[in-house]
Image (cartoon, rainbow over all chains, first blue to last red; front, side):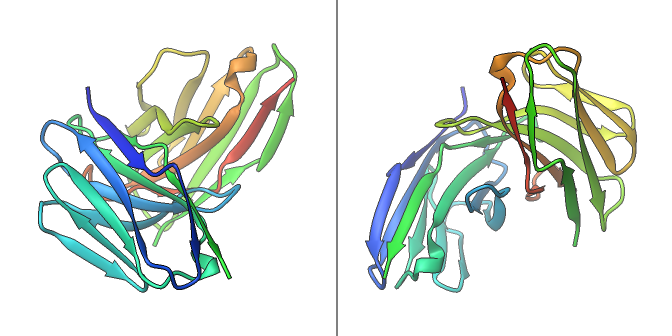
Length: 110
Length: 112
């Protein structure tokens, strides 16, 4: 069965303290791995898509990387506005469903 | 880019009452449409998806149903709500199956 596990469940950082979030996955034939940001009471906001091992994507202070078993979301010098829940999802072999992890709740304090 | 509208934003319903949640999409044509539920402490769970008008696929057996009467309209319904139907319901749309899905801002459903 396809599984997506995110760690840690929660992370508290000081402003400027860089760190990484992990997304481990088991899926037969990865068709895409997606990172989303979700603010409280809102729908997930798309950040990145990664398709093959070795691929990297960057946006402002965020950088996503992909290996054959996991993906990392690196946050460099975070700011309080980066506080949110970050979700990872993999494309199921059926081609339509996204299998989501439970997310990492990030809090960045001034 | 596409915009996904969901309403209402919050809803409180008694057990046994009916439900109708609506999702409409702008800025795209012939999208794939999805209904997800997000429960506390759990990841998003896909409930239904649709690749065209009148075409509905269900991912999990449940007390809910979905319909797609128009290309950019997706409706989630129930005849009789259960306590276990409480949650945050999200509508999403996408184009090709390996492209990202984009989400609306959801409906928070509480069952009393």
